[in-house]
Image (cartoon, rainbow, N blue to C red; front, side):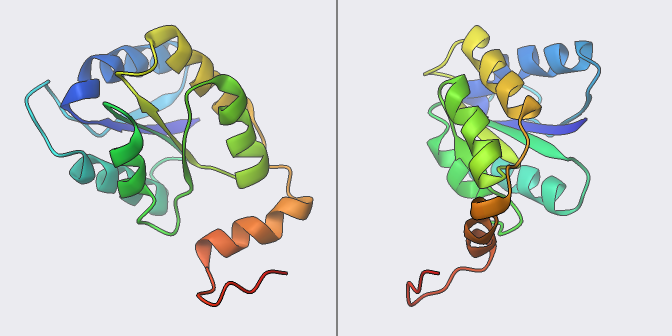
Length: 150
């Protein structure tokens, strides 16, 4: 699978570990940076990841920052991305199954290396269930402002 990964300085070390691990598993990994733990702004890297997903350079993405919150907001500014902030594998699996998430965000200061790997494993293994979820996911890309629900 083609996986894009991006981080900020707070998640640089975790990103490096995850890039190596994903490559060991045989995935084609697009490392979008940063290249060091020098201070950077997470929106810049979230936007790079979102562009990679939108442009078809990657099938799935992993976004990392200190808490996972900031970079997930940046990624979700792109309507082609459905980024779910997760902290454990069950949420990662449900993000794929119910929300057709194509990116997950993790907080390097909140989850350890083993938990991050477990979340990514669940995320990559999951499939979108479709069915009753398909209409809801379509609304994520094209929201209505009046709140009309089907």
